[in-house]
Image 1 (tube, rainbow, N blue to C red):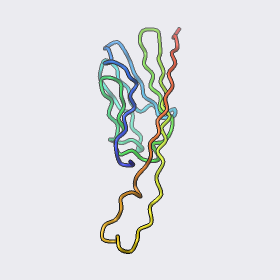
Image 2 (cartoon, helix red, strand yellow):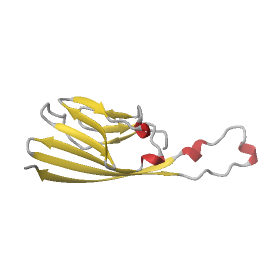
Image 3 (cartoon, rainbow, N blue to C red):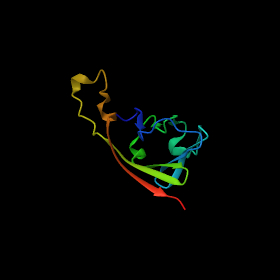
Image 4 (cartoon, rainbow, N blue to C red):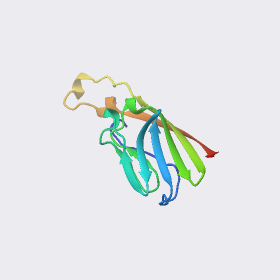
Length: 127
């Protein structure tokens, strides 16, 4: 539902101190973890809505239809880079017509959204 939180889970165990992870939305870096310290590269779109945990999962709070797009997680371990991509689609549901008798309380269904997440994984050896 629009306004809820969604977590992009890369299915990693806890990030080790020598690993580096970078989350991107489209081509823009939005979060990084180096030496188990998360940092956020906010633009106005995600201000105060991202949380990166010790397993590399990224939680986006107050999800919006404008958050739809390609998210990419890069995990660098030694000379290997593992990439996992998440295609996120948030579809707003149309408002349901209200009957005159239901005017005392507005139906919140007009704010609901379906969230669809697809992911792919690949690995690259860095030179």
